[in-house]
Structure formats: structure tokens, C-alpha cells
Length: 94
Length: 223
Image (spheres, one colour):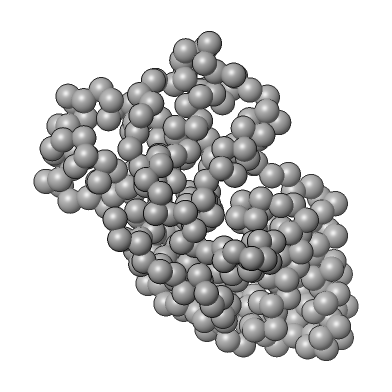
């Protein structure tokens, strides 16, 4: 396996969707190619850093405002029961 | 590399189309009961669904549109449309995946409106070879994100992902940030699984190259 072959399998490798024989080839390549080892390591970190970070703030105020606007539009459509509107302010499970 | 034309390119997918994605587990998701109650007009049930997914929908919309005001409008529209079409949700896919699919359609439509003379689609710029072959082989510092404050890091990540073509950015957002499976991402975008994998690879590699400027061990090149 060369670097181009390795790259073609990178997505399947990350997603764990690779058959055992090919996985052995991938691992063998990684053991001999420092460049590909760095690519795997830094690509994994790229995914992790995006997954772990909250890139966009979603403050409580925004959450409340958006939800209130959505619910108002839904109520205005007339499809929600009046009694259910009341129950939204009460504890569930009664 | 062959690029599949997405139905999103010219004709927005109807958000009510529910693609069947086989789930490995047979357990009934708690959302199913909430959706049934909401279908019957139960306000509290629908409000609970909004509460559960508003952050995810907002984040998805903002990643795709790169605009906060658009993301706010889209979040409202997504939940209102979902409410109107609840009867058409049959539970064949996760409710969250169904919502994300609506959010993607709304976001891409918003991008199209912004660029009135040009079609914005999942296919835009994906034929470029830029970033498909790694060039930067520098190792990164251990826990490189810890060298930046939370706001600095958020700014770096926003700037970096904003530079990706929409077709790559959307696939990366759904697959790697929102944690949809490859099949769910393909269904949400109207793409084939191989097309999703191809775009995901290139998105990851391009982001890696760009982040490397900030995270590599060579401090002189870090800022």
C-alpha cells in the first residue's frame, strides 16, 4: 500500500468500516510512513476539536426567544389544543 | 473524481420526504411518543421536542449559512415546518435526522437567496482539487486547543470552516459535528454514500491543513 492507496481508505479507517485484511495493510503502511501517521493524527485531532468546541454561542435568552416564537406560530395555526397549552406550564406525568 | 449531482442543486427536497435509514437497534426512541402526542395537538410535547433540538438545528444552520441572523430565522422556520408536517413523519428515521434534513434544505435555500444570480448547491466548488492531497506534515502540539482561550479557539474554528465550499462544509457539519452516520448524512443531503465519503475526506483534509497553521509545533508559524 502506498500513500495514495492509504488516503483512499482514510474515511473508512476513521469510521471503522474497513475489513480486517485491509486494516492490516493500513496499519502496516502507518508503521512505515511518518507522513501518513501525522495526517491520521492531526485529522483525528481536527475532528475532535470541532466536535468538542461550541463554535457558536446559544445563550439561554436566544433559546427562550426562538422557542417562544416557534410556539406562538404553532398556536396561531390552530392545531394545538387549548387544554394542552395550559398543560405546558404544568409538571408532566400527572 | 466523479461528482454526483445533488437534487438539492436545482430543486429543494421537500422536508416531508422521509428516507428510511435502518437503525441497528430496535428500541423505540422516546421521541416517538413525544411526536405522537404533538400530532394530537399536545403543546407540551412539541415544546419539549423544540427544546431538545433547537441548539442542534441552530448550530447546523449557522455552520451552513455562516450567518447568525439567518440561523435564527431558519431555526424558527424548521420547527414550524416540522410542526405543520408532523403527520407525514412516520418514525422510519430518527426525528432529529428529519429535522436536520429540513434545516439543511432551509439553509441551502437561504444561501441561494443571498447569492441571487448564482446557484448555491451541494455541488458548488466540490470539483476543485484543493486540499485533496495533504501538504502539511508538521506534527501538532499536544492538546493544541489549550493554547487558545475559548473565544480565540471558537474564532479560529469559525474562520477555518467558513473557508470550505458549502458542499464540504455541510457534509463535515452533519457527519463530524452533529454525529450523523454516513447513511443518515447521505439521506439528509440526497447524496450517495460514496459521494458523502469523498466530500468528507476532502473536508477533513482541508480543515486539517488550515488548522495546522495554528496548531503545529513550530511556534513561529502558529499565528
